[in-house]
Image (cartoon, rainbow, N blue to C red; front, side):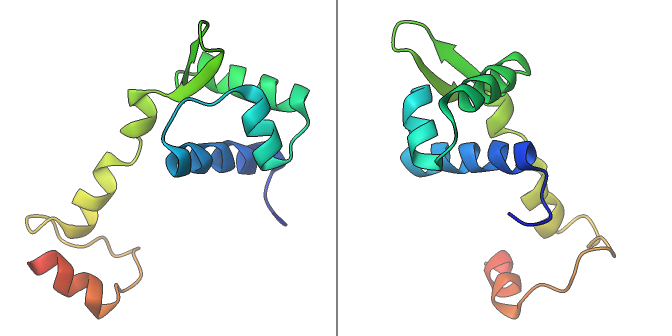
Length: 104
């Protein structure tokens, strides 16, 4: 992760791991998978929960993404493919296959 602030990179790695496994995860499981120190993982997950992006189930001792996390990028596809909005000029050209897919 050269050129990336370590904590920022870890947040996205954790979210991508949740996307992959699609189930609640314990701190130890995340730490082992991502090869992070257990204490750093615990602090990171607690911070993400405090910010509202994860929820913690005390019974299962596991974290899971919240609806707030799920809707973070809900507007992106609409912005990219909306027939009523012009394409933002700052976006690079889309590959032709993406454009064909959006038309169907």
